[in-house]
Image 1 (cartoon, rainbow, N blue to C red):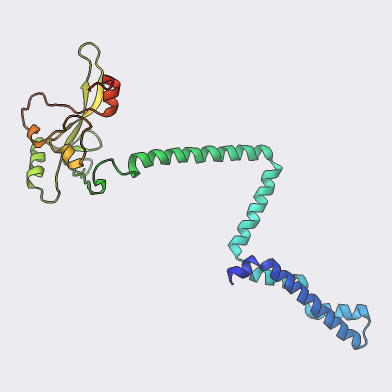
Image 2: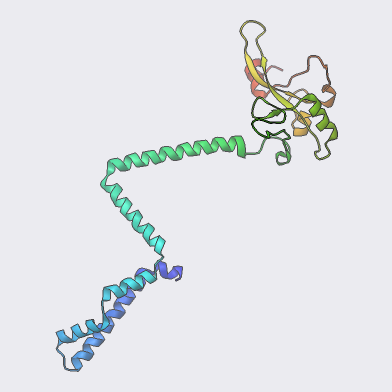
Length: 239
């Protein structure tokens, strides 16, 4: 059954009705010519043809797509029910709107955090190397959070022996206390290796980034790189 016939099935039904009526008129006229009365001729023609309604329904069903027809009937029934219950309709529409709004907000958050590419050079080429948990009772490395913590010796082995990546960098989450005295005022930060910004392909707006020469044991008090938001908030953008 073609889609054209499906969408034109009402026209097809009207055509079949005209054909059936024409057939009955022809049979009635034939019966009258044989000597029957008008009423007897009409009844005999109907009896010979059978149930006109069943024939038209069968043809209509042949030109229909079952699940679409059922879906349309369900939609019409649902719309009638909603129209007869305005209070329930209002609650259902409000609930649906809130659900759509909540899902949209969650997706936008997920898209911003996980789906959009990071603002670094060639983000699709970034790979994270980490130790994985073997089981709850036996695991590799130290897990104090979502990621495993490598020792400095392990990091040195990876950095000196890897032959796959164009560059490698290490980092560690930490907090820094901004208060010179009294109550602590901690901010989130990272300890990073010297090649961290080079590997990411990120350049600072002002000053310079870390280099491999800064990445030495016992380097004393290393420099710090702050974000633009932190610069504006804590130092009012002062150079």
